[in-house]
Image (cartoon, rainbow, N blue to C red; front, side, top):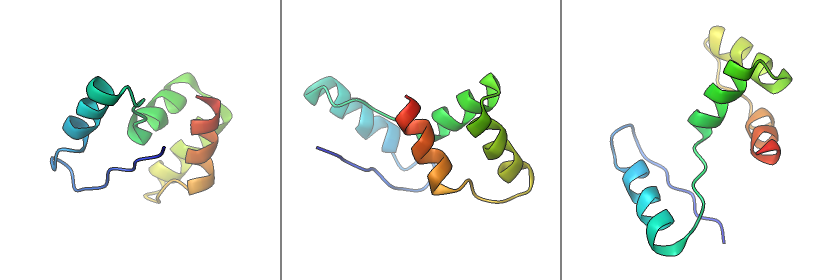
Amino acid sequence: MRIVLLGAPGSGKGTQAQRLVERAGIPQISTGDLLRAAVARGTELGRQAREAMDGGRLVEDSLVLGMIRER
């Protein structure tokens, strides 16, 4: 099962995700956390993500998916 929670900052995505973790045991994956961790570790995907972010661009889906796969 895959559940995606979308919403503006402060809309409660994290709160709802935590409830799913507690009640259904569904793992939570925060793309923001993945991006920050990859950048901090200096991985190749993190370096590419940092270049995009530093340039004011969105990080490509393929990079985020790569980080999820590495998780």
